[in-house]
Length: 257
Image (cartoon, rainbow, N blue to C red):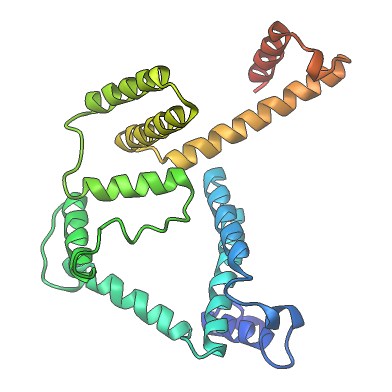
């Protein structure tokens, strides 16, 4: 393959096809949709991490890794006679045109809210008779992301609090119900309700809860490892630290940031 072809998408598709050819790579030839499932998920998370970091070079690289997974799945499908990359591209192109009649048709809209309302109307027409508007949300999504998406879809048809105060009142109510819960099963149920309500609060504040929690996880990891480092420097074992010492080291780790 000539170097000048490396930025050409069709050349990339042919490159992956070469890996799957009879005389291609033994590993690539053995892969199936199922064996690549975890790879696809992992690469998706790496794209999200690059997005969160705001690193353009890293994002470019990770998008390439994700694209590899997509093209590889399309090639596997082609090899087994299911579909090919042209069908993937053609399908999504047709969907974009169909769902943007204000761009490719005569529909008139003035705001993003009108676009979303019209989008949901079109999707409703596409769904099978009687199918829930929540049915298209993958249930294997991370729980916070799934809660965020199904709540967003419910809002599109008017299932929503009147104002932010209503959401906050619901958060307070759910906290009280956790305190009043008796059995472990009841507590689990009430904690789930609280988490779902917090997801809705995040939505009202235009915060992606999955991103917010990832950031909180990274922050905790960063600060905890700093506490470990400080404890080692002072010859202290973590298991023997008092609560006051934990608090002191934690605050020192925070100040170090």
